[in-house]
Length: 272
Image 1 (cartoon, helix red, strand yellow):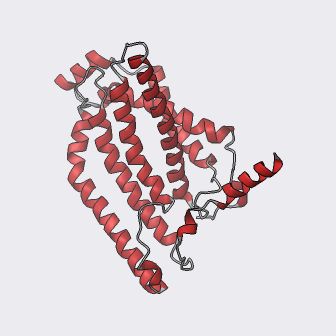
Image 2: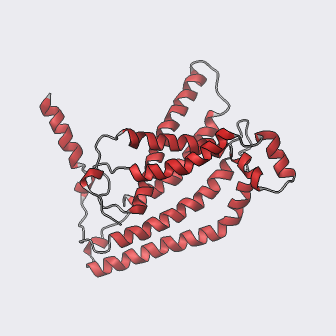
Image 3: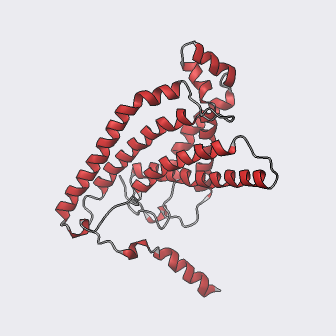
């Protein structure tokens, strides 16, 4: 896995870095909403399929185009993603996947804020609340909560206690890293093992939330938990491999200071 080069650092995102997460999210959201139409194609006839057919009808050209777009724009997004100055400097192939998912998560946060503001204005200004905004907010918040863990793992920004770790020699630090990574992988394995059956059943019957808007929150979030936890375990292993030969780092409060941002602010103040 090649290391990041200077041309991979982008202070202001270019058109591709903005467009890829946006187009991917649109295709993914459409494909998720129309997923029952795809499930009917691969399912045997029965009461469940008949119920889905009455509600969602069959998949059309636009539906299949959105599903294909999920894979196409995922590949293009991973290939074109660029590192921001404050992000982790050492990149590999799998890190690109995690960072692209992080970009999608950032977009979902902005979308979630827009949905909540829209609902507040309609509810308290026009007294015409929607039937969908609350459940849509819960749905997106679930995805944000799950996906952000993968990005946090890639950036090494999850909660870690360095008080004793920094005092250990490099050999013992490596031992601690191996133990912590092994625990993460073990947790992911047993979570997948224990939750696969329930997640599969909820997805195949497209279990919904049971409200007026009735979004498929259980059908989508349950499998997503297993997928993302597995990706977090893979990212933890990738971090262990890439950080194996790095020199020990002594952590302090100064680590939270973004020197690049401070330099840019100084230039702006000085230019004015």
